[in-house]
Image 1 (cartoon, rainbow, N blue to C red):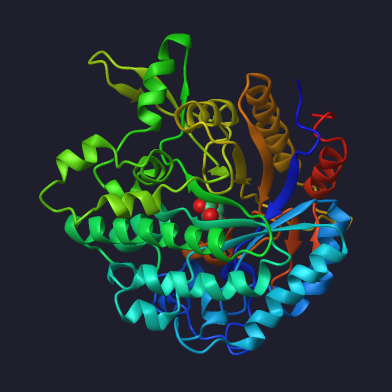
Image 2 (cartoon, rainbow, N blue to C red):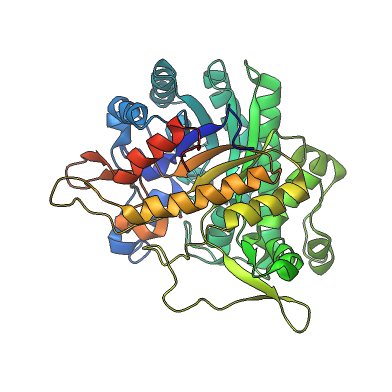
Length: 449
Ligand code: BGC
């Protein structure tokens, strides 16, 4: 069958991971800038304030995208750049930057995909409790309205939130991401519901005020990505894929069931009934308003089989198995199984909004970056994605993570995920071999896979 002729080939980034200019152009501090000042919070003591200097190099960066031949670019808006205090006065310089980015992309024929929230919260809103504050959904609504008013005459593709299981689970529960909290289950349940209401509010703003016909996705990673060992383990892998973990805010299914099925998982409602905030029918209607895409970020995963007690069991990693620089397993089969499981459950066209790997990349003696491992990784993952399409999974696009090497959250600049290598001393960019390989895949619409 092959990929659709209008298949969307792109690459993705997030504002705070690349922009830099953290204290320029009227931007205020975010939760991550302040978190990174805590000794030991970020590997190597790195800070996102300088990013990879994309704010200043925006035009030449877009020219690099053109050279790579990507058709779509997924980026996020920095809330602290648009509304430095989170609410109130709009920073026109911030809007100007994104207006120019969108114009530059369109000039070279690249379609913008805009994520409203990819984890950088204005510090002022964090001080007021962030996602614990019941005002958060209306703050988010107000911010979304400013962005939609400014960009929606030229932007038609939107992503509401990126991976709440990270910006809540890793951040408010596991203390690994900003702000490094360890909240109680009761507080987490409140933060989860407020977050889902934020999604609903953003979606409502886009549907009501967008000036061009909008296509909208919510983006999730599925933390329990599971691959069946044999045919008879398919059910076990599916069960695990949609499992609720004890640390419930880290479970993808909590968010995706609420958003795409209009209902929190039964197990969540019964197990935590004593600590849940008030959840009304109106809330659920807002949260589950129809979306155009199901956005999935896919990286590693586990082999799973049915255990003797009937429960899914993860097969221990085989010694010496292929893994990325970040020690994540190379598990291309997830591009078949996870996409299939999610499509069967939610029946919404899928966008792979992130996929890629961190590599030990450096500039070789001939001046090039020969990242053969990333090419092999992509080759395997994309082939499995194509098999899913051949088996009837409705996949509309693929965005590589990431366009550039960038600030990898609590791991700082230690991990390199880019198709484009960044010299962190000079800021110089060099397209890696994988970037050229990806360009050829895009050109052939995946036929050369
Ligand atoms: C996030 C990215 C991150 C990537 C690799 C995703 O969860 O959306 O911001 O850099 O994974 O860790």
